[in-house]
Image (tube, rainbow, N blue to C red; front, side, top):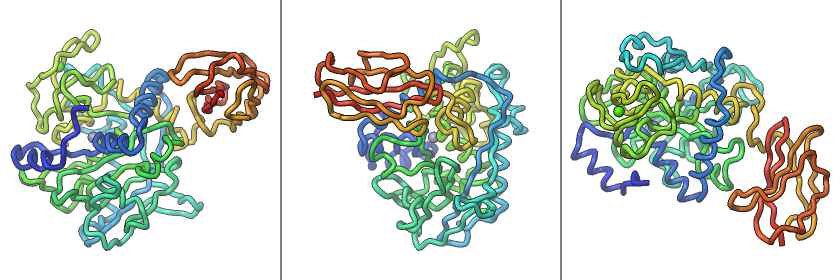
Length: 424
Ligand code: ZN
Ligand code: CA
C-alpha cells in the first residue's frame, strides 16, 4: 500500500505539480477505514473476488437503481437547481448505457472491449416512509464546508447531527450527497464513494465510520452546473463524470491504474494498466505499462475510461470486464437496489442461522437452515475445510476438532450464511 501519503506531501503535490490533483478520495478512505476497522480491506477484496467469480457475463436485463440526491448547502450557489440534478441523472444514464455521443471518440483499439452496462438510474419517487418524493432533499447547513469526521473528508454531510442529512435506507437507495467539501482548505477532492463490502452487514464497526453512498463536490456535479470549478489550473470542463466515476466505485470498480504502479492493477481483465493516477489529461499516445489483454496484447493507457483520472471530456467508456463486475455486484451484493434476491452469495439476511451453545466442546445445535437442500461446512480460522455435511441434522458433533476459532457456513439455495464458532 504505497499510496499512503502524509497530509503535508499532499499539499506539496498540489503546489509543486499544479496539473496533478487528487480528484477522488475513495481509495484513501478505504485505507483509513482499514486503520479504524482492521479486516475491512480484506473484506472488500473478498467481495470483489467473489463478485468476479459469480459474474455470469449475461446481458439483456436492464437494472434500474433508485437514487436520492441530498443537496446540502451553505450558500445559494451550493443549493443547485433541480435541473442540475436532472442533468446529472441523464449523464449517468447515457454513460452507463453507452448512449453518450462521445463514444465516437473511443479509439478503435478499444472498440471490442467497451460495453453498455445496462444499468439505469432514476430519482426515487417514494421516500423510505412511502411518501411521494422527487428524489431530491435540500438541507440548509451552517457548515461552510464538510472537512471531515473521523478522518474522512466529508462524512459529516451524511449525518444530520453534523449539519448534513442522514441517509435514506442505504440498501434500497443509492444516496448521493452534494456539498462543499473543500478538504483541508483547498478544493481538490471532487468526490468519494463506498465500495460494496459484505453488504448489508459490513465488518463490525465499519458502518459506524463510513456511511454507504457517494459524495460529490457541488461544483463538480451535473453537466450544466452554473458554478466554476477551478483547482488552480483554470476552469475545469465539468460534464458530470465525477459522479459517473464515483458510482463506478460504488458498484465495485477500482481505479483503472490499480492505485499503484505497473505492478498494481484493478483486478479487471480487460482494462489496460497504467502508472500512478495515470494521466490527468487526454494523452492518446502514452503507454506506460505492458499489458497482456487477450488477443489485443498491449494497449495504450485508456484515458477514455471513466475510472481513470483523465479529463472528463476525454472519458467515454466502461469496459466489458468492468460492466461484468458492476452487474455482478448488483446481482449478488447490492441486489436490494434492484429489488432482486441474491444470486448465490454470502447474504446475512438470507436466513436466520443460530448456532448454540457457542463456545462449545462436544456438539452444537444449528437452527434456521432452510428446508431442502443445504450443505454445512466448518472451516478453520485460516479457511481450511475441516468438516462438510450434506443435508445436515440439527445437532452437529464437533468433539473431533481441536480447540480454536472456526467458521460454520451453511450453503443453501437461499444464500450462504456463516457464523463464528469457538471450540473449547
Ligand atoms: Zn476514484
Ligand atoms: Ca499498456
